[in-house]
Length: 345
Image (cartoon, rainbow, N blue to C red; front, side, top):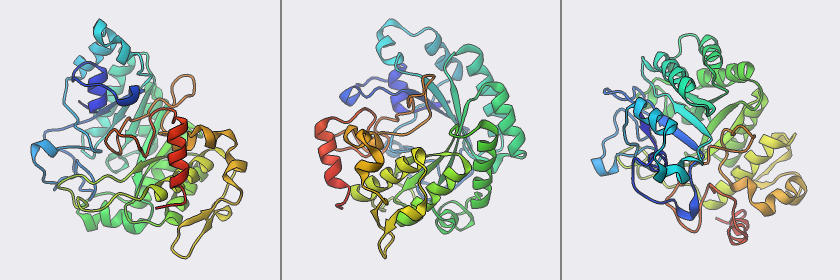
């Protein structure tokens, strides 16, 4: 297995400290094979044709060191005293499949081992492309004890999906298949127990991203956001991340769609598809949530108390005073900065 650098640090397997005490709430595990991922997504660190030097071998901006699954389970069951402060923050495990013919069967086996030995809830980020029987696979995951499922749609439009993930990119993924998986997972796991992941800044307009998020909500899935960050050696290595203004406006839209009975028709857009309004004032829609910075915190699968566990600290950028996804509650100073970014570029 691979685990995120933050996960390895929480397990005491890598040295390091967490900026502003942003300990990970979820242990992110990534399946890995000697022959790698069969997909070739233009922005991804796992892309089949990506060429990068060892020091830049990253995925979602960070290193993912490899460990035996049994070793990871043992650290969770019997953590050494020196890591108790870090590991007690872990409130969920998220297993991510990659596009590989063995991935579906192996995911079920890994989930069984995790659920046998660990009491933490388990999510699975599924690769629909490798599923022979989508409904059947989701039902097996549910029977094994998985309570949440994610589908990384990533691109907001079928054109971008095809260009970056489908045949035009030398990849196997199909836009329609991914959305069918979102619908099937929502039907089996229930409303808000499925998530659709989107990457802001791949070339879509804000209106196109808001439309994709609304579609996920119609199916009953939560929308979880990532800000594009270029991976060295990928096709989009020279592509710029979205502006803070663009990302903030989409964060607000996703927060509203995830929590309010709002439709795309209530949002206003300019001729370029930029969000110019939300139908009501943000204060009217959000109340105290805006002043608490909640729309700008990382969204992810919940812990057993219903609070977000998957806070993915610094998955979008390096630690610093201005963040895109806040893995903790923003301070008053943070919120002042954020509010100044919403309508500015």
